[in-house]
Figure 1 (tube, rainbow, N blue to C red):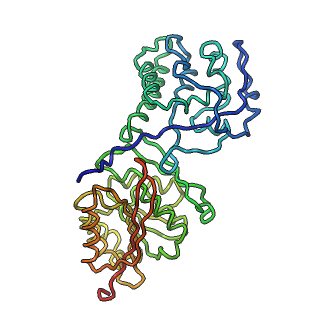
Figure 2 (figure 1 turned 90 degrees about the horizontal axis):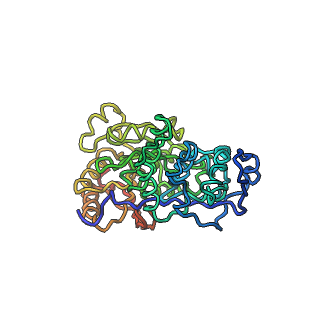
Figure 3 (figure 1 turned 45 degrees about the vertical axis):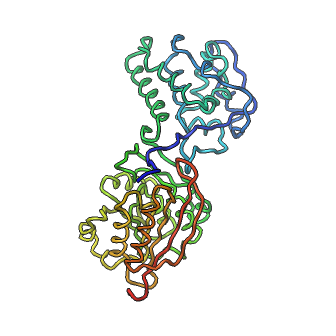
Length: 402
């Protein structure tokens, strides 16, 4: 296979907006009254910026910043929560924005007197919030973080030093590519999700990605198919329902929130995170989760004897990423699709240039197994590495196979 590296992702770039009216701070050493900073708390952070922050405006290590200053700087540098397949871009109040980085307005009021003397260009709530979005070139931040990590920080207590090193290491990892990013939670916002389910968004925990555990990442196909199901669930969802290769669980969780009972399945190394996401999104009542190896389905059948009766809806999202996958998808579909006129398979597949041969093989094998293509659509979308085209297909049994 050539032309597609599943681990070659663009780094998510943080983006925030800041307060329009900069809040002034006195230069004495007294604590700034936090109530002053809260006066505009209900105002969302607007998109325009009037101040340009340079990495040199951050507290230099030679100034021996106290722990609370370093902690606040390292927390404000945290990359924004992933929203869909890019950083979250929302109208946030200062309190909400800081809360996303484990900070409060009180935390900022504590450090502003020190910043006023030593780092005056970031000595306001406005300019401090700007830090997280200013540096489009991550190399500036990497150099700054490396300076912290290379310093003995000998003016701090030993436990404090370890806390600073740990926080700086986390910020550095976030900027070293998708496989280096520590565990994070991706926020999925889908059109009409709230209107249909009362759920504003889906939260999906994603551990660090490795080439052996691609199911630990949420892929663009699952987003596209989830949106289709929200828009037209009665057309596409017929119980009993099983998703094969559920990954982080987006589709199954959406199906559960729509009021259907769904069985989610995947390999044993994917299951712990999948189960955690089901609980995280309060979907346990409608979604059950089981281990299923497509090459060895007998353990699943033994645990779920009713599965031999078959499912009316089988769901696959992005199931083809190796030369063996087309055969496995066709075989497992043949085993578990109920022999019924209403039973069907939902297949969402990205159109990756290096996988044309595998897609063609899958379409041919589905035909060989007795599945008739009854619906096909192509759609533009996104994944973490940029724009992507997707194809959605629906298969049913040919009448001669029933």
